Every structure is written in C-alpha cells, then in structure tokens.
Image (cartoon, rainbow over the protein chains, first blue to last red):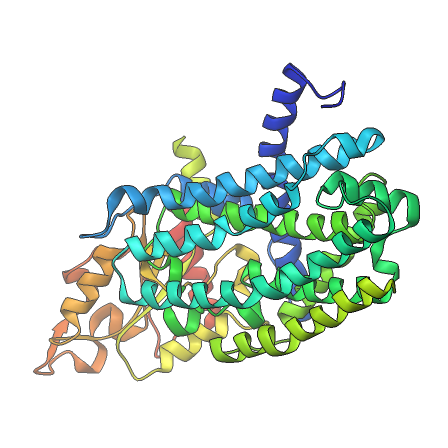
Length: 318
Length: 138
C-alpha cells in the first residue's frame, strides 16, 4: 500500500469513489442522451435529467409483485452496485498510485475485476428470476446467453496485454493492473500494436454488450419484451439498477483505457475516455437490435476467432 | 422531501401508453410527440414499456366491457404518485359511442383522471399543454 493512501485517507478515497463514480456515470448518461438527440436532430434533455430520474425513482412507491421472492427481489440490485463499487475502488487504486504502480495492486486483480463485472448480469438474472414474471424470465435467459457470448472474446482480448507483459517484461506483474500500467509507462500503450488494436475492437463491442446498448440490448428490449429483466422493478430498486448501469458506463471505458491505452494517470486520459464514450454512443445510434442468436454467432464465431488471432500475434510479438 | 419528490415528478414524467380500445388515431398522435419534431424528451418524458416504471398513464379510447378489467389492472400495477391523462374525446366522455351497448363509460367513472385533453384526435400541441397543466397542478 502506498504511503499517501493509508488509514483515514483510504476511507475518504473509498467513500469518494463510491459517490463520485455514480455521479459521473449519471452525467455520462446525459452525454449519451444528448449525443443521441443530436444524431436524431433534436434538442435533448437538460444535463440534470438523469439526476431527476433517479431522485424521482428513489422517492416513489416500490411494488413487490405477489408471489415474488421478496428478499432476493429487493437485494439483487445491491449485488450489482456492490460489484461496481469494488471495481471502481480497485481501478482508481491501481491507477492513481502510479509512482509505485507495481506495488499498488495484488496478483490476479484483473481476474477479480473480470468476475466483479460479471456480478452485474448476475444481479439482473437473479432479480428477474425472483420477480415471477414470464417476460422477465425471457429477459433473464437472454441475459445469460448474452453473458456466455461476450465473456469468451472478452477474456481472449484481456489475454493480449497479459501475454505481452509476461513475454517481454515480468511474469509476476503480468496479472496485475499495476503491472500493466507500469509496463505501458515504460514501453508505450498496447494499443499501438496490431494485437492491441484487435483487443481494443473486441473490448469495444463487449462494452456495448455489457452496458446493454442497442445492437445488444436483447435482454431488455423495450418494444419487444417490455424492458425484459427489469420489467417488475419500480421505485428505489429500479433506481439502483440505473445507478449500476451508470457506474458501468464510467468503469468499462476506464478499464479499456487502463489495460490497453496507458492508464488514467495524465490529462490526456479524459480526451481518450470521451472518445471511447462517444464511439459507444454512436455505435448505439447507428445499429438496429440483433436477435440473441445473431449476437451469439457474432461473439463466438467472429469476435472469438479474431481474439485468437490477436493472441497469436501477441505471442509472436506484434 | 415533498418538494424534492414533486420536483422529480415534474422533471421526469415517464409515460405509459395505455390504449383501451381505439381507432389508433390518438395513439398515432401520441407517438408523434416522441418524434424529433415535438421531442418531449427535452422535458424528460420517456415512453416506457412497463406500467411499473410509469409516472403518467396516457389513456386513449373508450372503455368497453372487455378492456375495463385490464385498464383497472394496469392502473393498480402503476406505482402510486401517478397521473392519469385522458387523451381524446372518447377517453373524456365516450364521444359517439356514448349510447353503445358495450361502452361502459369514460375513465373518470373508474379511476381518478388528472387531465382531459379533448379532440379527435387532439393536436400534439394540445397534448403537451395538457400534460404541462397536469404537472403544474402537482
């Protein structure tokens, strides 16, 4: 643990992270809606719109449907928020202690982050299954299938920087976020190589799918299965799900920046971050929804072979 | 607390489109509200897919014997600070179906209605005005 982040400073950093990340996520949700509005040639909502939405939902009545598993139904949204808070703290912790980057993280924290991101679809699946609604059950099964689809290319893409660090530098720091950042500070970002570009493309699509944005909004297709997984949620739990999505919208691009594009230690990171966000929003606005079968085919038979190609290139050293 | 709640409701009225039995005319005009031309998303209004997420029910058409239980069920499923806005003359007072054998009457006989927007169909401007008046009475 670095010296400036210990004791009560650590507590403040934790609380700050857990407050700042949802706020930033809600602002980013506004950026998403604003850019979408401009793409469709209209004005778009004011910047406080997501805050008004969440505030209203928090103060509204919460209905638990008859026959639902009450405790599970109400606790599922918290699982997602907990996972995202964990990711937030770990990401900022390994990124902002750049001076001693290698020591600010533990071996295998990439794996922990990988599975913490999986807590969000898990929360959606648990909540939907607990709600005793057939439409939510359809959404949950789609969420499961989609997760199975994008996790394989995601892991393959993450293996690219890990293999590079392990081959060229140090096996012990290959599985650490801090190790990846330190490597990039020394030798330049992974993105400026062929395998890095392939990994970035794959992770961009995976971000889209993890956020549930339009080509992959299959689990909560509003026009088709009435918001699917969250159909029975109202009031505060629904607000919790929206906050989870907002936090993900901050953390996934940050994660891409950290593992492939040189970390978030300098001011350029803000521009890179906004570039990724705008790319995601534009992708959302220019695509129709896929069916679950098309999404699975895309992830398994197009992106996964691409990821294997990237991995082979990383082994060769390109 | 109360002020915050009213502010939130005013700034983000999510609408659910409840067509009881209509000729689709009012429905088409409601959908026009969401197009770039009228763009009610700039006031925070979003069309949601489930009554659980809704703050305002936009009801159209005259209720008949078959649709009455469904309408009541959807109203009960909506979490409670919720507005009901009757759109179109059919929803306000049954219009030409008043003496029909299967029309069971306008909405305010069964659920509390916050705003009436007459017209066959009403203009989108009239709908925006009606919703704004209903919200400002909160």
